[in-house]
Length: 462
Image 1: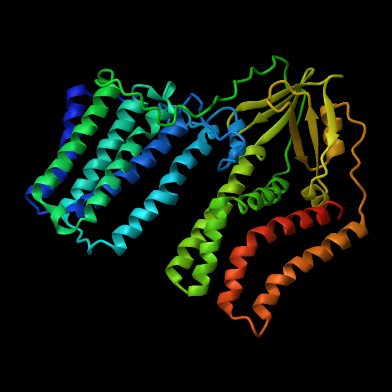
Image 2 (image 1 turned 45 degrees about the vertical axis):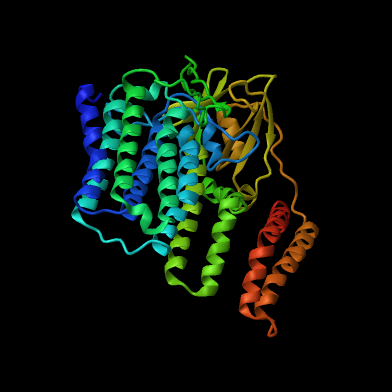
């Protein structure tokens, strides 16, 4: 681990980094707008650091009971992987919480701050002093992450409150300064600016004292996010002592193709709907900058969903070890679930669309004690019957529902009918493009759900 610096040295570096804006106010003539730029950049860095900390946390993080998180399927992953030999592993199960932290700030607070600076504020002149101040504040947070969080193993028992405390405090500072900028030139007096910088510096020092020296001086019970239900990490499983008698790997192409269903579910989330709606509006307006930015966001959403789905199912090898069936993750080098092969375990064939299209197969394994749901997926496998024979599983029925042209035709006809409505809006001569785009934004999310159901019904009997 990283060698720890003396507390006094770390505290002094924090003071120096936070006092550079004071020099900017008293010597370089900074105003509230420049302070807002500096502290916005620091807040963005703190959010990135908090999300990175979450990836290394060994304990559970707050979940969203009854709601879908970004890449929620990774919550069930066991094990982790190391990027450096002397650093702790990164746990894929923490990715959903890290994305929640990033999403709240960069999906809501950050864009509002950026639009506010670009539309309300004056033109910001980038200077050496401004760059030095931002870099110094960045460095102080990176130093705390490497020296304290990693170097002293704080990741072992870190709480959600500790992860989001710094971003929450800096966001409050941004909100306060933002309100002051609405007051015009009267808010730009040097006394007020100095007070803001000193107050923010004292707040950072107090946080440093509480985290690394002693307890809080004031008994104020701020829960932040610790009142949220914690999603404890799944317990690590012990591999059976029996050697591997047989093994089969998943069909990676079917996993990648199956990830398109996860992309479809992502498209009906609130954030994605808003993003796609904004993209449609940008197309109507014809702004190439917003079209490009929103295209990148949509592509990132699609890529993240596909990568998450592959990480969940595409790196699994199924092993027969004595009387046990083990789903072993070759990337994380950790068993994901262990099932006992016997009369208490039930098997059933999953009628997956991808399997019907590609000739692969998968099973639903029920009564598995090592997972909370009690059932897991085995597959997709290139040859289901051969895999069952290789693993010597007590499965005797692998037939799927027969192809039904009637259902395919009925569902396909209704699907074309739904798609004809938006197509007619764009092709009808009496409807202008603005009305067509507006109608697409309003009815698109509802039509997407129905077309998705009809498409599933048609393909499930193809």
